[in-house]
Image (cartoon, rainbow, N blue to C red; front, top):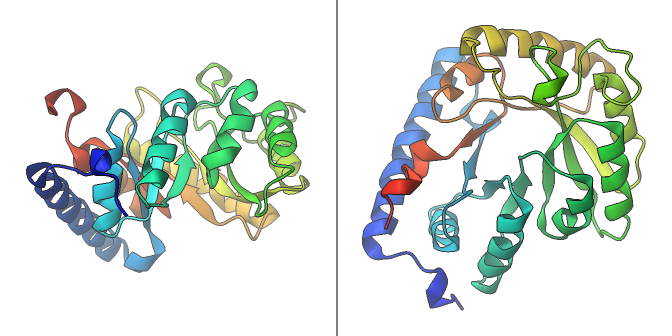
Length: 247
């Protein structure tokens, strides 16, 4: 039974349906141009700052994957959505503090932003009581700037190098290494960023053949990310509109 407080107004439901149709069309076109199977690309609806009613509406329209980036907002929203009888696949995609790990593993199915061995260990401890493993993507730094976040490709840094972080996840009970996530660096053209990411992902898959997921691309550039092999695209404003305009 659906909680009426988590039900979108008819006009809002129509807005979301229209946005979803446009995004699905863009994804299909990008896959066709790249010679890829549309089924190989998963859209994650980034619902941060949007109400639980939008999540419920998206689920009713067939969207299965939702993304959030702040635990303080996501925990309550996930509970509200669950109370409405809806259980999407939740992706935590934002910077995660170690002291929030225990909260996040209660509702998240996937954490996409693991970029240090210390965070991997915190999630390992937090996920010890889960019935199913927590899927983890290692966030990779495309430009190698540690200050921006992301594990460092080709680095021997035992705490933040890409391979040490990946091994910490792969070896952890309760975690499952499924791939990489990245954000195009500020000042980089998407083409350059995703071409570099594709190179990193190719090497990574050689070391971790089962970790084939590649989460890259957002509302403005996911078409290019698909061309360079993204299996998951994170779409917010193109799908749900600019938050400030919503009533």
